[in-house]
Amino acid sequence: MQSPEQNILEIKRLKTKKNAIILAHYYQTGDIQDIADFVGDSLALSQKAASNSADIILFAGVRFMAETAKILAPDKKVLLPDLNAGCSLANSCKKKDFEKFLNENPGRTVISYVNTTAEIKALSDIICTSSNAVQIVESLPPEEKIIFAPDRNLGNYILNKTGRDMVIWNGTCHVHEEFSLEAIIKLKNENPDAKIIVHPECELPVRLVADFIGSTSALLEFTKKDKGYCYIVATEVGIIHQMKKENPGKTYIPAPARDSTCGCSECSFMKLITIEKILSCLKNEKPEIIIDNNTLLRAKKPILRMMEISEKLGL
Ligand code: 13P
Ligand code: SF4
Image (cartoon, rainbow, N blue to C red; front, side):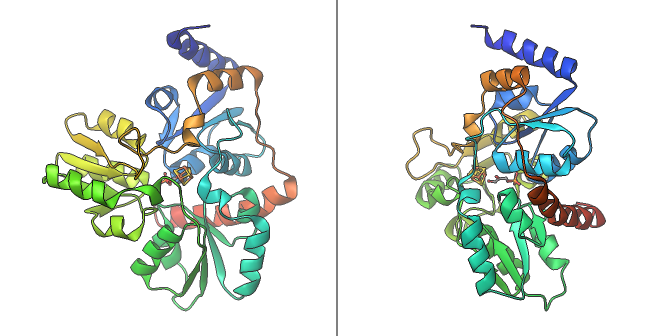
């Protein structure tokens, strides 16, 4: 058994030897964020996957993110240290059910959140992330009818912002639907100067008490630029590592889930990735993400459409 320091040194050595990069999402543990070559939200991670000179991308995140990287960089080897690192939201939208839903709602442009399997992306017209969802919808002509999947909370958030004709799939994320409004209000009463900052995947009652709503990167940016000094953070707790790193002088209080044992809210899928698994994955170059070519090509189109719109809008 090697010490954590030895594991990290070995990961660094293997990365150089194999020309590999580690892309990590903000919901990873702090030690993983610290060894990553790039840390970001879903949009930034996709953009990075599409433009880098590595031979191997090791994804410290969940499966839909690694699949997106593979779709955008099919010639690279994309590794995910634990293939069980799924996503409750992506799991809530199965291909057969989605096809039925599309047949029941014809004539609509299908916008799917990046938190979907490659199969669902292949059935979509445009992909979005929480960073660009509102702008992607607004980029379409006002009369265009839309299907939005799979997150009903993000869908409702976009619907309220844009007033567009949208039919929304009834999926949720196990982290964001579980925040306790009572606990958030109690924290606010104990810390009256704190601002409540919320991810748009949260349920409406939590969004209604928010001072600011945004994607992980938008929340991070807000805490950097805002004049306040204390924040109640209603998203996965991993983001607080980055907030503390970028703004050590401020206070960040995690919002707890209803049945929380950690006093916060953790994504059980994100937390399947560990330093030990990253090391073993880099050593053995598996588990590897494999997507059949037909699905990959069909899934790529709506992702590229998202990236073109994002680029045009400077997102
Ligand atoms: P972001 O795109 O805001 O990073 O969110 C990803 C995610 O999985 C939210 O639960
Ligand atoms: Fe999926 Fe929710 Fe985890 Fe994000 S936090 S990866 S949406 S289960």
